[in-house]
Length: 123
Image 1 (tube, rainbow, N blue to C red):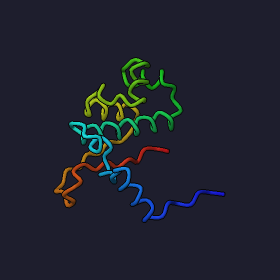
Image 2: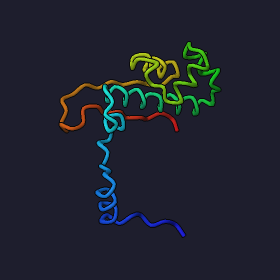
Image 3: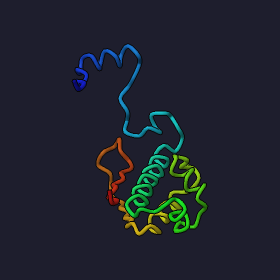
Image 4: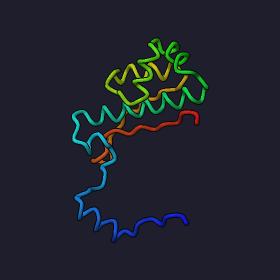
């Protein structure tokens, strides 16, 4: 029998009992890490890289060659070591994998959300 979702009252009671709080939408900010928005953008770029590699059915070796890096470095990046490369370099990687990268700058409406990343990589 499938599990039913937890009732809101029970969820709230458990959160209060154990001191859990809702996420702000950025796990890096939730963890109190410095430069949380930058880390989130890098992580989202890595997700897009992984999707592009999979959609093109590339091996890590072939993908690394296209990116101009060594396969072990790509492996580390895909395992979440997002600090290895700058955001600019990650965007270059996406372009090298024939992904279209669009950067839009506009006035923000939502005061709590400063960075928005839209992923439209091939699934």
